Length: 366
Image (cartoon, rainbow, N blue to C red; front, side):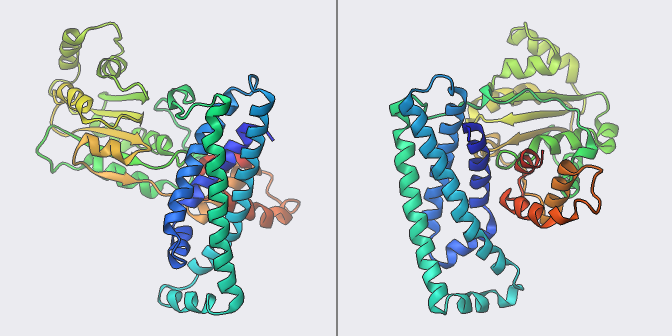
């Protein structure tokens, strides 16, 4: 099993650890702190596996063995969490008023109490094992931090809408925020925040191509893929399609291009969490007309905080049915007939492991 495959499992594992059902069960057995530590460890391991994947031809025998042990730990965690998640979903299916009654009944018998205690110990043991492996990464030349700019391809505004499933409600929420006209300032920001793979870019593309948005902003719509390189000159240069100008020239061109006009700017995949450069960028964008909007996508809520006190849309995972519909669409296409109906139960089990994360579902289904 290569590092790239283990990375895909680690990403799904990371998403599952943060789902509401697992958090609720951890709260019941008083293990929230261990869950948070495990989430942090898995995040570190994701970075190490990305680095391992990029260096797979350079690894020494010791490095290859370390990657193997790391992958084994990831799969061990995935198996453990599968059992854990099954119980969590059973609790989630119970009507709200009966939840605590069922929880007390669930943990009242010796067997089920033993399950809770054993599960807690297994989580702690596994987390310590993964911690030890993660700390040893420097011994084999793996970096502590992984820079996302190296792995992210540049995005654009185009989207094939039929490929996107389960984002109608989120799209309507964003469109409503962008078309609100009750603000005094010339410009306002909306930030879409969520973990990697949830489809933040796809959502922004859906909004960008919406006819209501096009009718309001007309030809003054711009898309800039930022990634790690948050630089005012670079962002404005991409926006204006002029990359060789200094700040003075940019100021004149920005004034000519958007001065007094209502515009929409999408800043996709932003990581910059310091308010200083955001203030610098705002000084240019404020030249636009009243009602101008900037839509930002980011994995970090700190980015939204650095921008200022503006609306945030937390992007959730897909619903169970939308997750299944996406999996079916990619894995079966137009071939869903009697010959494939026997695979439905297996497929639904696979979808549960993908934790309602569209990217994980797409990778596995394909």
